[in-house]
Length: 209
Image (cartoon, rainbow, N blue to C red; front, top):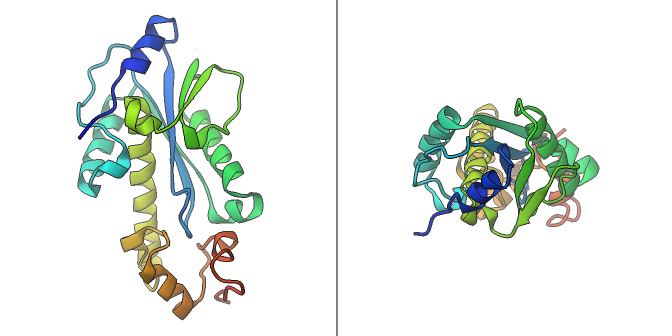
């Protein structure tokens, strides 16, 4: 397995950008629940765990362990979210932008350079940034942000399952699996579903009263 490195961050630190934030999202393609964006800043020259990786390449246990380590060692970190209702009102791209804005505003510092996974390139401000295709496989800071966002979102979907277990959110985390589609057909769409997404699959999606 290949792992992301800190080469991009080290180059930026040497260029005079001491506060480099990695930013990535989780939940973009799900049919239910919020989209979440993680933002992480490591201190220049900090020794980082060698097993930080793109969250999609890790098991849930590995992600949970690394999320705790990242929170311990990061100089700053934060997570922002935009709800399924926000997504239905404004669309997924504005929702990611809003979640990124909320995460960055909660960091407790003003980054002077941003490393975005390509999917979060829509966030706009006046600071320098680099939008990187497969950034979570190349930059350790982006990978760390992806882990925080993924773990936070998975935990949230498990809590939703505890409130309403008929959809199986604890298993698929709101994504479009066969079981999820079957349960939507059986029980109708619930208050945490993205109706704008579901209408792509169901012409007349039925909604719980």
